[in-house]
Amino acid sequence: MTDLQNISPQALRKKIREKEVTGHTSGMAKGYIQANVVILPSKYAYDFLKFCFKNPKTCPLLDVSEVGEVNFSKYGKDADITTDVGAYRVYKNGELIDTPTDVQDLFNEDMVSFLIGCSFTFEHALLEAGIPLRHLEEGHNVPMYITNIPAEPAGRFDGNITVSMRPMTMKDAIRATEITTHFKNVHGSPIHIGNPADIGVEDLDHPDFGEPVQIKANEVPVFWGCGVTPQSVALDAKPDLIITHAPGHMFITDIKDSELSD
Image (cartoon, rainbow, N blue to C red; front, side, top):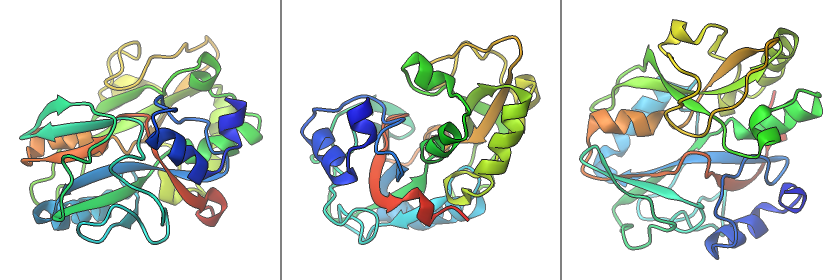
C-alpha cells in the first residue's frame, strides 16, 4: 500500500486502466481528491444535477463532463471515465445487472459523467492528525449504510441518503468533526455521531455496502454523508441506464485536496 499511497494520480489511473489495481482505493494517491462517479444518458442529467445541488452533504458535485466526453478539463485531462475506475456498477430500470471493470461498450456520445466528492479524500488529513481509521487498519473497504434520512428530491431522483461510518473515541470524533468541516466539497463534517438507530441503521455488522469494522468499547460510530447515495436512489428512480463506481472504487483526480479545503 505504501507505493500506492505515494503514487501520482496519472500513474494510478494507468494501473487501474490496465487492471493492475482492482481493489478499493482508500488510502491511495495521498493528497489527491478521490471522486464518486455517476454516468447516465443526457436526458437525466438536468434532474441529477439538481439532485446534487439540493443534497450537497451527500452529493457534493465536483465536475460534470461535456456530453459524450470521457475526460474532465480540470480533474482528469488524460483520463478515461470508461476505464479508469477499478469496478463499476450498471443499473437498468433500477436493477443491478453487471459489475464490469470497464464500461466502454456501454458508453456513447449521449452520456454525461459526474464526479462527486468522496470522504476518502479527507482520510489523509485525519491520519495526519493521529486519528486511526479502522477500515484501513483492517485492510478493507469502509462500511456504508442506507439511512432513514430522506434526500431532497429532484425530478425522478428521490430516496434516502447513504452514509459511511468510522468508529472513534469521542475525543477523536470531535477532532475529526473540526477537521472535516474544512472539506465541504467532499462531504464535510459528520451527519451523525452515536446511536445508529437514530438514523435507521439497525445492524452495524451488516452494512449495505463495504465491509463491517470492529467497534471497541470506548468508541462511538461516526457517520459521514456518502457518494454511494445515487446508487441507492437509482433503485427508486429506475432510469433506463445509470452507471456508477462500485462502492470504494473511486476515480482518482489530478487535483490536490488542499485546493478544496478551506
